[in-house]
Length: 225
Length: 225
DNA sequence: CGTGCACTTATTGTATACAATTTGCCCGCG
DNA sequence: CGCGGGCAAATTGTATACAATAAGTGCACG
Image 1 (tube, chains in turn cyan, orange, blue, yellow):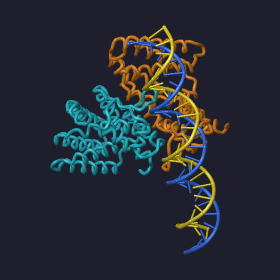
Image 2 (tube, protein in one colour):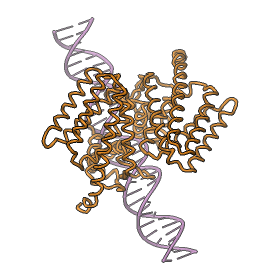
Image 3 (tube, rainbow over the protein chains, first blue to last red):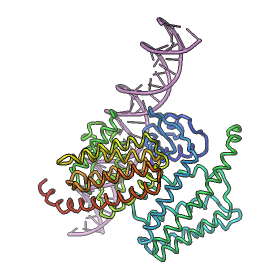
Image 4 (tube, rainbow over the protein chains, first blue to last red):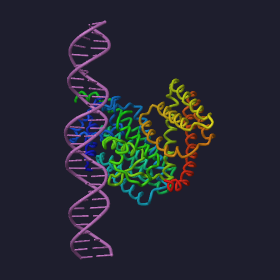
């Protein structure tokens, strides 16, 4: 989008995800407006969004800080996502149109291709993966749910950059998607819920492992910085 | 709070809940700033909040409109709330402190008193009820969950004004709360989850009935207006 | 040498002016 | 008479200046 708010959001978000800041660091609106290249007004909106997504927080006196995520919070994040996205899949199973299903299949074939490459195109995989889950959420036809999930799903991206996923993880993900599509074709909400649940639960463990690696190599990275 | 954003939020929200607008109506930031008595800047923040809570929406070209809630959406709202608040209760069961439990008991005694009056003090009941649920959410120690629930729970207030609750409904609610406290004392997450689930599911039906009454008397009210 | 209080400075909150965009209307043209 | 282009009005988006508030700093005093 061409609005200043959106570019501010993107730039600040990128700045945060690149690891140029550390938990506990304090930022000012002015600094951020320098980073984003726009005035404070759109920056404030962007910060508001990032705050919703918990990529930023406010101190008691409304100063901007970078929050630190404990292990417990990561766990909780995935639990919530599993709960809500399973629900989304269940709802979607009885509401998807044939076109929606075709679209899902198309996205997932994209995903299969990204995995089939050697080496696999992880960025492309993640992109298609995000699209897939968004499409499922969309098919659930629940604006509220969509809104909530949008803020939950974006967050873990912080860690995506830090790890080479194993090919087997990627393959299994795409197979899960295939099965979800099958559940949709069968219009079986229970099946859809179950496969989405296990899909995300496994993702959690992959993630937790990735986190562990990142954590253990964190000190070195900071020293190098 | 004394900030202009908050007063704007309160005033606009009140304006919406008083039924002075109808679904589909379009509002401008200027109108709203007149209503709130502050400039457009804080109004924009307030609108942003109300948008998050789906009390307002934006058209494709970012104009502000009053959304209409279908029956399906009310259902979904309660389903989400049940899902998330059951989860909160489950989490809280293993995390509440003795002080938290005492606080919950205190709030609920307040609630019992409000019900015991003749006629029952519904406003006081609703207030204590809100406090109780907030305290449970707080005890779950999950910032994310708290954030999400805060936006979900506020919404149904629209309808609260429309109906005299039956005494039996109120009594049953306070008994549910007693049982939840018992579950907390026993540190039993499954029990806590179950009682919270049934509590909210019943609330949904009470609500749906109230909605039906409101709907059926809506035309008359509009004509009178 | 620590502690609390005034004062300076930094940071956020609000208002206003202006730019960009969208909408609705009116007029000319087919 | 319908339809499209373009102008005018309305509305939202952005920048900037200023006000309010909180943090930091240093000095006097115990």
